Length: 121
Image (tube, rainbow, N blue to C red; front, side, top):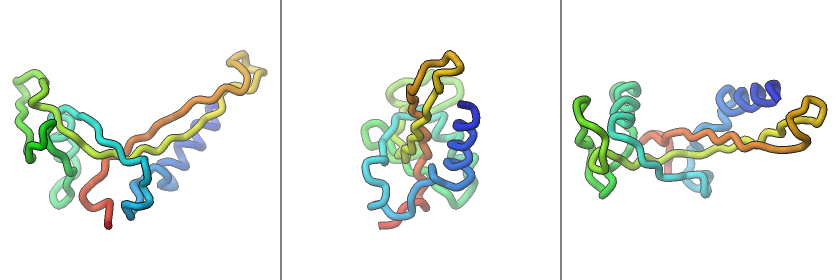
């Protein structure tokens, strides 16, 4: 099971299988909106550096930047909507010889935030 997980991680991150496709049409139903705390949005935007934007809006469509302060608790006003690309790997767990069950499978979802430079129409 560990070898399978390592192979899935290498495929997703090393070979780019979890990367956002360049064309919108190639994304299919894998583009999903997610609610993120404004603090998480701000942290990712800060780590991206200048020139790269994480498109987002407030829960009710408010334009960025979202209201948030280190001293405030998170509430509905400090939630934002971010678009992510979901890549799911199906892992086969257990071969029947290791006591973990026979032939069961598990899904490993990987969600990559969509940046302003990712998609073209």
